[in-house]
Image (cartoon, rainbow, N blue to C red; front, side):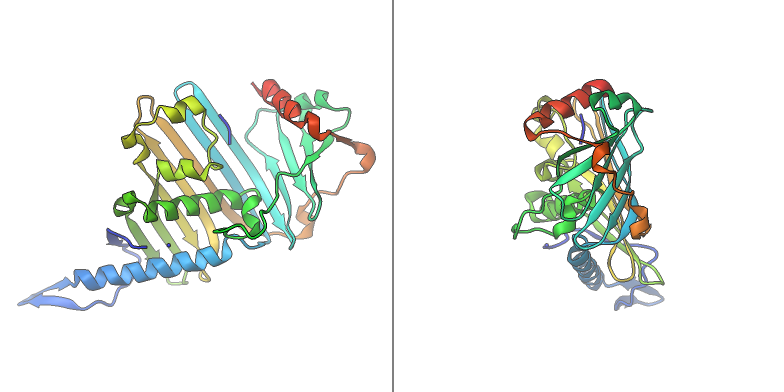
Length: 301
């Protein structure tokens, strides 16, 4: 294996300070549940609206991205450090999860139709140079309906966009009544949203987890309705700080899933690698690229 609506149930987080009307009896006070629910719904809608407006734009960030899936003997683990810089965006993802010598770092220079791959030691037998060039994977569909923005194709941000999309799809689905939402506001204006996405919505995104077809075909309706916990942290302006999905599907063979992206800082052009000389790059013809990736997977087993 590789790689907006209503809230039916709303809870108040301890960190949120709520000014609500109350129903009273002698010596006792109880919060007005309807007012409480309405406040939390409005707050959650506002935070999601801010996130949607910013998540897919061109951010200058550094961060960590990860995707893990475990089902029986099948395991997939990806851990990358990510740099995104400029508009249009240049990106650099460094593979931190593979065995020594099995790494593939990916450098995309803004505007280029190709990506530069830096092959780890044991993979260098695939080319006479450390760097190889392949057709870029970071293509932004023009005017795509429902797109959150052009940055959603790049490392790290793509994971956060997929998690957000799965949450939104769940809220709009028949399972939306099971999608609980808790919003915690902090004194500095930042926030934490705790919510969930159904396995069905996660799979419908298509790009978050690359699960084997036979495993996906084995999921029952109950499996697909499984709610996977999602946590989203935002800064005071509503921008992304961290998005994570992590949970277990209790199918015939339990499936553990985790994916996320966390922003660690603001990037500069110095965070990008020095472009290699053309003499240090092997170009992989388009017709040979599928076989090239297959060889990488074979050597990584």
